[in-house]
Every structure is written in structure tokens, then in C-alpha cells.
Length: 384
Image (cartoon, rainbow, N blue to C red; front, side):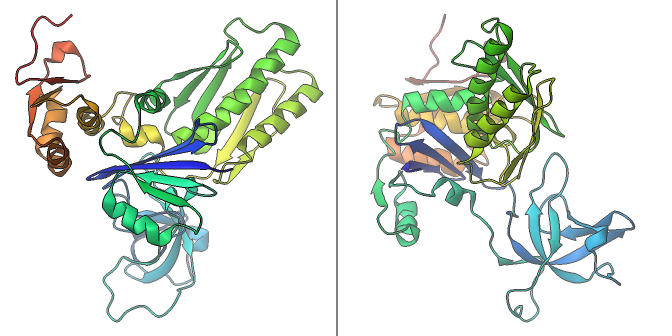
């Protein structure tokens, strides 16, 4: 598969979108500072914090929660405080730390190392998006210089943006839809996507558009293709349980199974797809290579955008706004606090690009959790 990779940066945040040859969104990534230290495939020299018999060893990797080395993988005679060379096999998720397994050291460690020490860096999620591409567009000059040294020969690299924005309005709308619970299907049905702590449930609803066994199969086949696309775009992982429309005929279940394997074939993340049951239930197990999109962009509970996400969205909207002497960002108080505190550098970078300071205005809670960007120094009155 070839295509184009768009990379857009603000201080503290990187967004990357992979587009197919036809311009459709094929993959999407958001990385923010503080999202996690460890990556799958990392090799660390780390110290044992605590041993718990029959469970395992808790390992310090510099993250908020210790990683877990299963009891069956613990070396004989392991003690608390000992150092081990370990490979990360699963990222932290849903209140659980990363999982690790014993690994061979790539070479002698430096004298008196400060632990934990990363010896080998694992996969960069951005590299998973950038396989087999023809062109990379980036809106950050420093990152362009880095990419120029690392991209394979033959890939075109261009600096474009940040004004006008690299991500156009149509692409931004498609990205925003990735946080919606409901996804329409071409057949008239829909998907209902519901991540919870232990799994992601996806329900296939005919919406009254399909009738009989043939109609159910048609809806299921359309759903299979869209499920593979949504899973990849939303970076869903772990156990994914799909409730397809019921299929009693074995040949229909086999056809759906084949369609699912085909739909996931281009996914660079390891995925196992189990055969459908007559009830329509299908289990999919996908390796966790990066946090799910909703984990990065939303509050801990529910689908509501976090104050950090609101603040970044407002900054990007300001960059896309028609030229004006001054711009006001009207946001919820928590998002204003982000722009005045942790995201100050991002705000100042946007102000430098605009050539003027941004005016921050605390939005009335009665107006809801959204935000507005407009020209002028005072919020307009009597807005409909």
C-alpha cells in the first residue's frame, strides 16, 4: 500500500495521518508528552521493586505504574532490589502497568548506570504509519530535518504549513468522527463502538435496512471492512468482541471470517481473528502497540474531550482562522488553565505564527463544554 503521510506538530503534541492513494484516511496517530515512557519492543535494564508470590515481580520503568514480570518468568532466586534486563511486551492499559519478559542485554551496560535505563528503543508508532509511503508532508522545519535523515530513499519530503493548516477541514471532520460512538455503514446499518476497561464491544446494527439471511450477510460483510478501518484508526487493542447479525449457515460464517481476515490484512499490528459463532459473535485479539485514541484525547470517563484536547483543538482552529489583528479563544475554564500552564509553550508557538497574542476567555459553563475562536477582544453578545 502506498500513499501520503501528513505530520503536524505543536509543542507537546504530534499528529500524523496516513492517507491512501485515493485520499482516504487509513491510519491516525496522536502522541503527547507524558503519554508513557515504555514502548513495545523496548529493552530496559531495570530494578525489581517488589515480589508477590504466584503473581510476579513489579518493575520500575519510570512510569506511573510499575511493569509486571510474570511469576513463571522470574529467575530462580530473584530478590527485591535486583536488576534485570527486560523486554516490553505490552503497554500499560486501564490501570495496569506494562508487561515485560526477560531479555538478553545488547551489550555491557555503562558503569554505575542510573536505573531504569533503556538499552534498546522499540517500535516508534509513527514508523508503523510510515511504511510503504510515497510522500511525507510536515509543518515543522526541525522535524523535516530529522525525517530527511531517516526516511528511505525515494520518499518525497516537503515542508508545508502551518498556515494554511496541513490538515484541511474535511480531514479534521473525519478525525473528529473517530470519537463518535456510532459509525454508519454503506448498507444503511451502523456500528456501535463501546470501549470499556477490559475489552471493546462492537455491535452491528442493521438499522432495519437488511432483511433475511442474505441481507444479514450483506450488512455483516460491509461491517467487517469498516470494523477493520475503525479499529486501526482508533488504535483499539486487546480483546475486541463484535456482535454481528446472526448467521446460522456455516458457509456464511466462513465467508465473514475470510472477509475479516482480508480487511485486517494490511494492518501492521499483530491481530488474531477467531471464527464467528452462529450467534454472530466474533472475538478479535489485537496487540497493544500504542494507547487507544480515546485514551489520549478524552477524559478518564466517557467520551468528552479532555481540557488538553480542547486547548489543542482551539489552537489549531486559531491557525486556520482568517487573518485578523487579534483572536479570542473562548474555552471552558479548565482548558484556559491548560493554555496558561502546561500548554503555554504551544500557545506561544501559535502566537508567534499569528504575529499577535491570543486573548483567552473563560466560557460560561451554561454554554456547554465546546469552544469558539473569533476575531476581536470581547466575546460577542446574544450569540444564537
